[in-house]
Length: 220
Image (cartoon, rainbow, N blue to C red; front, side, top):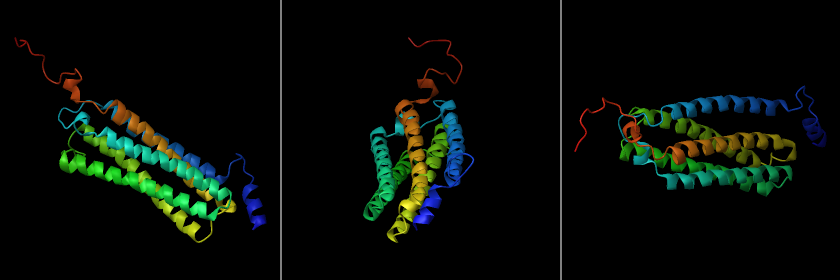
């Protein structure tokens, strides 16, 4: 086992990085371009919906702030899971991996509640207006990434439950951690731009952009 661990850490590559870690960074780089395009699209069409509901009508910033805090706490739990793995703390590995997965699942629960409220209660669907199309596409893709991360974490928890995670396999946890931290960072950007900055958008007319001809007679 000691020989295998030494070989694992002594892997020689032209980049100086483990091949698996390098591939993860390449994947995250491509994901940056994906989310960059989705966020840019949302910002370009921000405030241009000519029919409601608008962000100011439906976005519940306090609730989303709580879900954001939950997701940020999951990043702390992920750090602790990797630290426990490096220390070969089997109990800590299980606890922190499970905590990270549960916090991620809680965030998804908030998102499901939000989507249900927006569509069923408020009448906003992906085809309702530009806001609905860009909002559901952007947050939906992020939710899919969180779902994949939760599945990954649960899989690692099962492996840890069988006693197969430790210092020699810490890279498995580290790769999951890189992915999870990336998902959290992307959400911070989305939360800032969509909710904190754009959460009070009320359509082009309210923003001073007239969608029709300028009236020739002003009301007295």
